[in-house]
Image 1 (cartoon, rainbow, N blue to C red):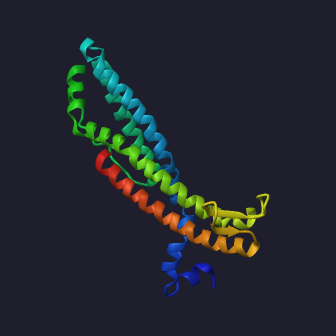
Image 2 (image 1 turned 30 degrees about the vertical axis):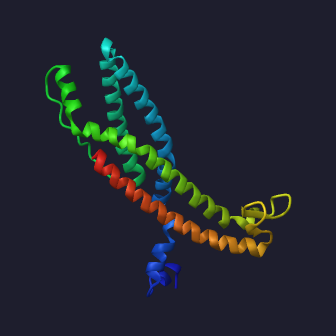
Image 3 (image 1 turned 60 degrees about the horizontal axis):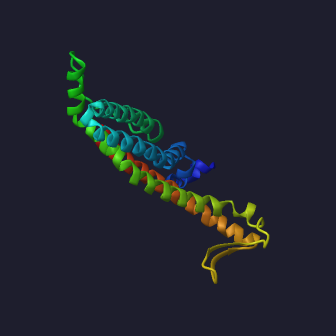
Length: 218
């Protein structure tokens, strides 16, 4: 009997679906996206802050009109890229929601772009991306760091000069001390459970982010 056949027995199928999550490529693609989203958000916040502030400040000499127009085009292009990035990493397909541009002058097309609700929903997405990206980055980093750190404890616990690793140390008391192979093996079991939990947390965060992106970018 193979592992897959044993897992498909009574109760085994559910257990296997739970335990296999860290091994799914989609989870690692989502992990990369959640970690990168904070840095993407920082870049766009910088672009938008500079473009909007300079554009508004120079409106009196009409230069601001062109600066603001370029800023709008920049965030629409960024939203276009974000839809493709989300589809590739999270598996969420978001169709382009923009109104078709009418034939006519550049001014008429600019009015359609500026009056399109999808344009301003794109901006709302990039404004919201920074707090979301920060939350995703902190949670994802913490879960995977502890999970993988504990899981690999048998390979590195002896590396520090004192031959032990102290975690959650407040200076007087250490709640977790790994200083022997049995301790390291026990930590590895805990790490395996944390990795499963981290994978499911990533799946949940990816679903939340995909839903928000679908609502604002779609």
